[in-house]
Image (cartoon, rainbow, N blue to C red):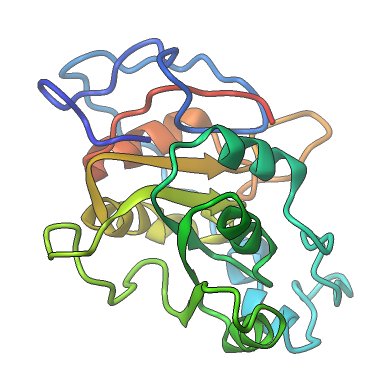
Length: 231
């Protein structure tokens, strides 16, 4: 995602420089001046998933005993590392940073990194493991970070990284989340969103996200989609 240029509408067919990254290419197109209303997603157990509790040894969902952090592999996810290698260096926000491995990889690649997560337990582990690495780890809500806006001197981010956070946010809060990220973005900021997309053998709804949903939420928040890719 990047701030819009010109009239601020989404550019079909989402094939310009890579900005938004999803695990499956989608072909939804929204033309200039077109509006779209999405049906509201039904509430599900996944909307009540306890992501904070998982870092305290609890279960992610009530119906299954998921007590390990399934997305943590002890290092940066390879797809994220590849994205970071190609990104212009600057100030980076890792939103929903978890145990901090992506943030640390970004720091190793030369970014000035701020990393946030709503889980105090996760951030405390980051403080311990990456003490002295020059990364600013903060406990913060992705929908209301409390960070200074991009308009403030010395604030804002050149790159915003969302590695598997978007689909973990309740459906009703996703537009608000993208608006908060837009508040932290300058005119040339790039936001990478890596999330699950619909697939016959993939994640169930609402963890799998239709590109049309992201497009509508992004447009309403003031972003323009520059590209979609498979990771």
